[in-house]
Length: 234
Ligand SMILES: [Zn+2]
Image (cartoon, rainbow, N blue to C red; front, side, top):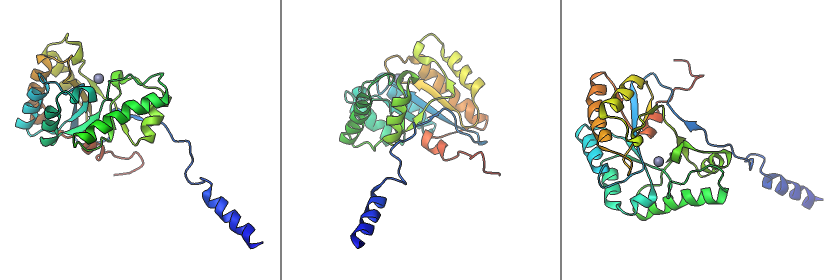
């Protein structure tokens, strides 16, 4: 009967007791829980040849590291601009290959949209992204589950500049950031085709103002490291 107990052991170790097949959907992180005056600037929809280099220059001149959520189909047209972002020490997150809205989509299609960007990044020598920003901020349980399974952290925002509407002046955009900034804030701007000079000028204006008020800047991944766990008394 020895073979029988062996069979039991084999069956027991094969059965996924410790690794349930059902994975949880990735949560959407909108702000990092911290008391430190650190903020993350993020830029979606690029790279573009018009706006991205101007924004990069401001960031570099001010020694500010930010996070760019890149669209693959834009990056493939201007890989040199993406390379400039990487060389400047910016964090590169994924914003999908086609900027596909991940709501009511079949999970295979969601996977394809995400994987295609990974493949492009790999072909351009850009590290595999660990952050994903949802186009239009739209998602459903299927999309969040796929993103979780593929190892992504889904990054939302706590300060929405609404710059992509191209309806606001630079000072209105800057004012929105200055009024809404909080420790651990994630600010959303755009360097895509819907961006404008107002975005560039707003970024130029807020960096010195925030620095003067004691704020520091970092990438989203660095900001996440400052997360203070709610149960951790300090
Ligand atoms: Zn977008």
